[in-house]
Amino acid sequence: MTDARRDRSDRLDQPVEPGRVRLPRFDPEAFGQWSENIARYMGTAKFIVYMTIVIGAWFAWNTLAPRDLRFDPYTFTFLTLILSLQASYAAPLILLAQNRQTDRDRLAMEEDRRRAAMQKADTEFLAREIASLRIALGEVATRDFLRSELSRMADELDEAAHRRQKRERKEWEEEHS
Image 1 (cartoon, rainbow, N blue to C red):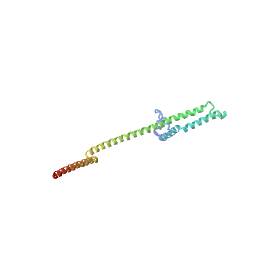
Image 2: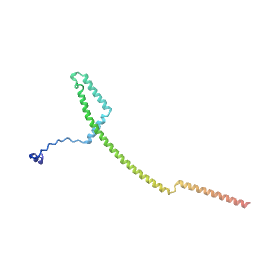
Image 3: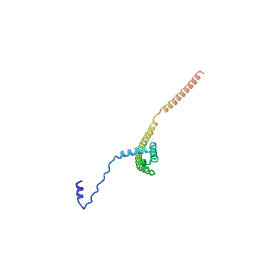
């Protein structure tokens, strides 16, 4: 006992502090994982089959066995108690597992939102960059533009050569006529 508590316990004008009950400490994460494993197992067909076998054996033993070997002779009162006890523990464990799953889903949703916001910002940045490149490329001659200009110039040169040939032929005919 500490000195301060001993001093107070000797004094009659001070109430005595009740002794505190200390509960054992446990790791909430380990307990949560344990409850998830139980809830996951209870949600399987394997559990239902095993439970059906146990209850069937219970019924068979307590109806077909000799009366002095039956351990639950009164309309299966002990079986009802056992099943109620199982349900009273299973429900909170399942709720704990669901709460943990909800927390994980919430964290995953927040992470998805964060990533979606980052992707949206990246997409908007890239869209602005592409728009600025298009504006800059609008002032630069492209391959198609150069081809069309060269084709147009070749056509003009062909026409000029054709006119020159006509003129030279006309001049030649005038000289020879």
